[in-house]
Image (cartoon, rainbow, N blue to C red):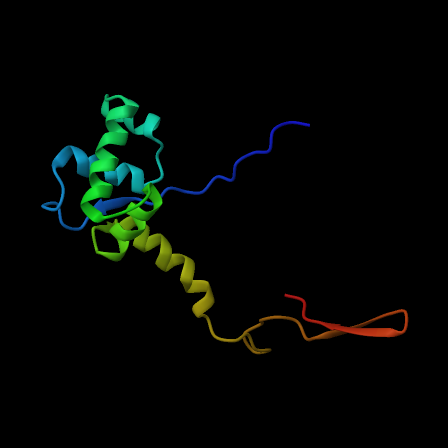
Length: 129
């Protein structure tokens, strides 16, 4: 048995809504943390040590009265510090479009009619899409 794989979630493209709230370097670190990067990844990308990354995050936590990194990011979203880039909004809008279609009808060639299946003594009624 191998190790259990961590689930992979796509990283959202995030930017600061108001750039005057944080110093430039701290803003870079917080944005990359909001995108889901670890301290090591941020450090490699910005050419600083992971300890410096954690220091910047701790300073931002103090500034926003956050208790953890997750709390910092969630408070950043709630207080309007972050906004999703337009590409992320476009992807989200495209994901919603299929659910906005009207109910399928026999005219539009939607779902086939309901089929009744009998298994043993029990009749099961199911929709097949």
